[in-house]
Length: 180
Image (cartoon, rainbow, N blue to C red; front, side):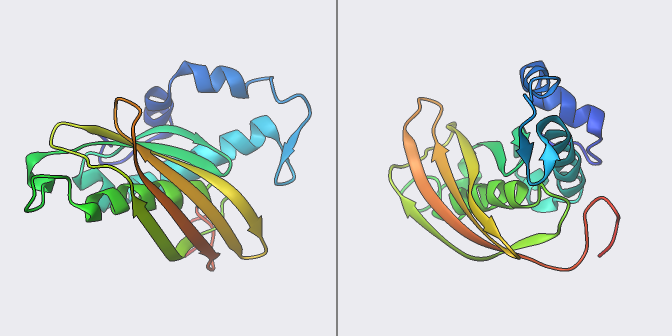
């Protein structure tokens, strides 16, 4: 669950030590979007913390951030009985929301404000009450003000629930500078 005001320390605690160990000193001189890898990972974590702090929709559904990085994010949500459709399955709108949020977190990891301009989803299998769904977003391409992100939603047993593709568009302002 995301706290009311997610701090960097709170996000660090959620993401865990393994990711931080990968980021600290293991960049090997590689760059991400012109930044040394460790710096790009810190920038992504800070941007996602700012975005998550004001993400009321995700917080209302107890969606938690489980992984972040430059051009990537993973979010997790437990399916509740209130999310069931008339067939007793998780309503596709909730799965779409989880995938779209993961896409947004990945796209906003470079300190530019970004929105989804188009998205599509293919539902592969059903989610049910009690299932824990994880949406893993990864950047496919980013050029100019446009980006393309793929998100795979899986169930706790590893079964793929949905595949989502989001097209993003950069808008004015930055996340960390407070512009907007």
